Amino acid sequence: MALDVGMFEGHRVNRAAAERRCATLTARRSVKKAHQAAWLVNAVRCIDLTTLAGDDTEGRVKRLCAKARKPLASHIEAGLGLSPGELTVGAVCVYPTMVPHAVKALEGTGIPVASVATGFPTGLMPLHLRLEEIRWAVAQGAAEIDIVINRELALTRNWQGLHDEIAAMREACGDAHMKAILATGELETLNNVYSASMVAMQAGADFIKTSTGKESVNATLPVSLTMLRALRDYGMATGHRIGFKPAGGMKQAKEALAWQILMKEELGRDWLNPDLFRFGASSMLGDIERQLEHYVTGRYADSSRHALA
Image 1 (tube, rainbow, N blue to C red):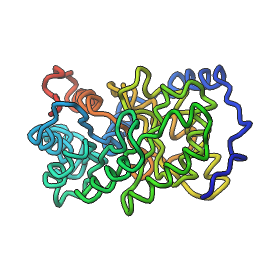
Image 2: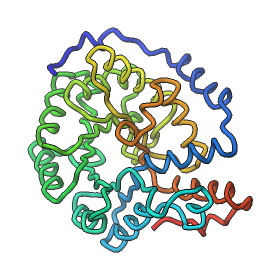
Image 3: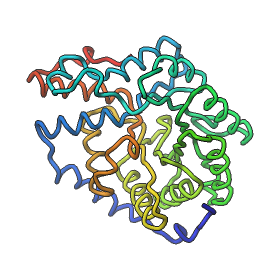
Image 4: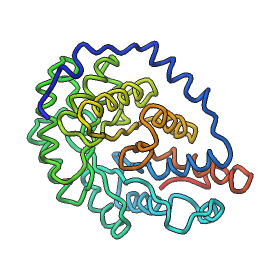
């Protein structure tokens, strides 16, 4: 849709109230035993298993894809009553040059390959090069593209410029889903987070995503709450549902529970499915597997037993 600043200009976010709201979420909601196991299994379904390191290789990507196809050990699957191959992660996320390796490793599984693009993580490249990177990744088989917004345009409140850039990226994605990374740790205020969320959705983002994982501050509950309120307001105004992806810094199973509680409290049960909710995480899967093994066996395994690729 065309830019409509009336949907966010003048909107003010009360940071203190947002922080209080988030502080009470996990304190008021205790998820234990079989219910906790079920929530953790659902978290696995929503993970974008990710490797975005400078020393990524074909071998590392293949190992990550093997983990994506079988995220839990066989005895844990059996203890939870899951059939072999029933549970997979939501997607595998890699750099553009790693997309062909991931596509080959996941052939026939139905697990989509996501690629970061547009000069990730800073986005400080000429627009035509950012668009070409998207087209190249899609041509290599990426079904989802995680783009980064130009933070300068958001910080200077050049909303038309930001809208036009994201809309051009949406067009370059073609049939691939587009996740717009706001890099919220660099947007300075929750007001900017709300506004940038609205602009990204108006410009055609299928998901809005908190962080690249490379900022000094990544996904936090208050930032996520602000983005979810923008999602809700946008949905009420347009009738369209947009997905949400927190990313960066999430390492423990209890964080998977906290974000799912936030999603259910703010947006409802429908947003606890991979088509509307993803985690950008990898190390968190190891801790989830460890907690599920404790549920099945009554014993905690050393974390090295559930190491990722």
